[in-house]
Length: 282
Image (spheres, rainbow, N blue to C red):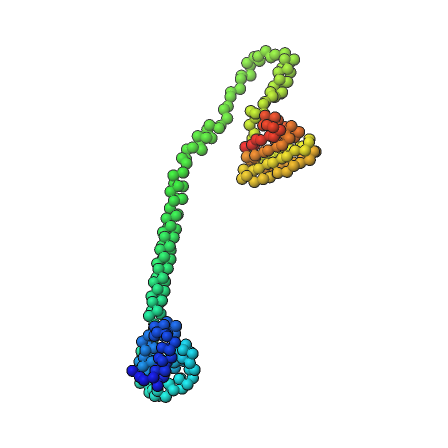
C-alpha cells in the first residue's frame, strides 16, 4: 500500500472523491481491475512495461478530470532503463485481457464455429442432391422406351388396300340416264347445312377476320390468357387475328359483327346471349 502522496494515491483519492468504484473505472477504460489496483498501489513491476503504465496513467487522469502530463512526468522517474534480459522477459509475458474481452472473444469464436458448421451442412446436402439428380432421368427414359414392333404395326394398319380391277371382258352394268346422273352430282356437290352449335373448329393456327357493321366490342385471348385484341371498334372496322389456339373470344353487339374463321363464315347467334357472344376456338 502507498500513501496519498504518490501517483497511485493521488489517482485513488480523485476516484473516491468522484464516487467511482474500481470496477466502474475498469469497465470504462477497458483495463482489468487488477491492473488498476496495481497502478494505485504503485506496484509497477506487475504492469507489462513503462509505455503501458504511462498510457494507463494518462487515460486514468483524463477520466478523473486531472492534468495527465505532471503525473506522466513523475512516473518516468519510477522506471529504470531496462537491459536486454528485462526486455525479453517483458515481451514473453502474455498480453492481459479484461474479463469482458475474454467473454466477447469466446462468443465470437462460438458464433464463427456455428456458421462454419451450418455452411458445411448446406454444402454437403447440395453435393448429395447433385449426385442423385442424374439417376432419375435415366430411369424414366428406360421405362418409356417403346417396343420396336409398334411402328411396323402402324405402317401395316395405314397401308392402302389394293382392290383387284374387274376383268376386261365383264359386261358393264347398265348406267342410269344422263339426266339422273347430273341430278345426283348436283345433290352431292351441295353440302348439307350444319348448325353452328355442332360445328367443330379445327385445332392449330387460327385466322380470324372480324368485320364490324356497327360499333362493337371485340376481345380475343390466346392459350396463355394473353390479350391479343381488346378494344371498342367503330362501324366499318375490320380486325385480323392470326394465332395458335385455343382462343377465347368475346364479341359485344354480336348481331352486327361478321366473323370469318379460316375463310369460313361463323354464325354467332348460338353463342349470343344479351347481345354478347362468348365462345372458344380449340
